[in-house]
Image (tube, rainbow, N blue to C red; front, side):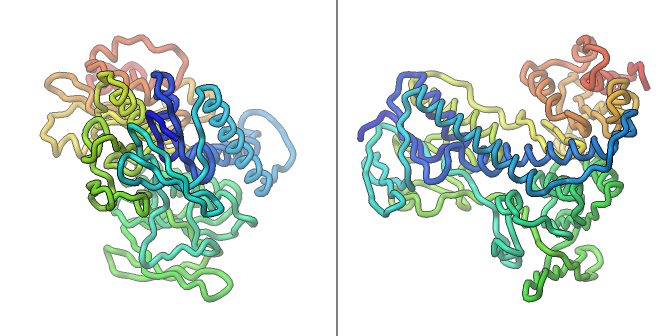
Length: 465
């Protein structure tokens, strides 16, 4: 019952923390109340990408003539897509179980709660409470879909992302509230399989409102071609679920005009709330701010021996951020000297079609920060590889500090750009300048050439525009 480390939660923060701790020689236990891998592997990152891939394959088949291939009429099988997605998730969760056995990590089934004296009380499914002790405890309980007062989630007509991945029947019409990553990814999937989709976004910019304005405009243009309706700078005033379907009252924040949109189901995609209630924070005096646990640069709370990582602490609610925090936290616990995370160099990826990826400053934010800029943009319509692949939508945009050549930010929209953004993250980490990037030979033909070309465009050296 005694451990060097107990991790509460086994998501993309919890399970890497446990594995790294075991590698460093610590005796480790993980408390998990549901499925190994947490939301990410079971209901978030992985199964959603499986659904999106199904939608993409369906679109390829539907447009096979564009590639010189004649096929019969294609039909989407909604139930089979959902089943495949769940199978992928199940396989990944089993993989975590294998990794835990390999690294001799103890798995404790149940709901964990902090107790005084560096203890964790675990309540199992039968209500039995068992107390475990550890020299160190990491809280990695993750987050859940945020609920709005005027958009109560009932799990039937007003749903969140988990339900959206396991609906028994494909809706004919859907309203999605929120145009961040979750909202636009589901908008793409459901539109691709034949659902009529309307996206409502509170922010004026519209789709992916935290991205660079040029990215938002491009995605809105592409989505309009696909038949996805976007209502930006608008709020959902109420949802009437008394009838067979839903009647969503939407108000324009600019004009004040209201309209009623009828649909079968409403998907709430308005963000994430941290799972910090009822885990014993108050009893131990652990400091929080708006539900988020306050930690130092190595994720230690104000209580000795208690740490927190992932969606329960301030910072981007992203799986790769949680993993990075986990490894740094554990290495510090083990007596190593890890380098703190640079939160200005965190990549963000949205897996809609076309994909969106970015890191660093937007053009607007860079100007507001006082930089004099050099901005370069290269469209995929000018890329040989993109033309050959039939993926000419989108562009790469790079932003440099004109004085020193520092790469302040990069913003991409197009096919497979989520695979390309890591190059920019590494470049920024290594403080590479614009001219060094231009002189970095990129293979031809590849989509990644657009990064080099965009940099060259910023310095009036671009060849293929």
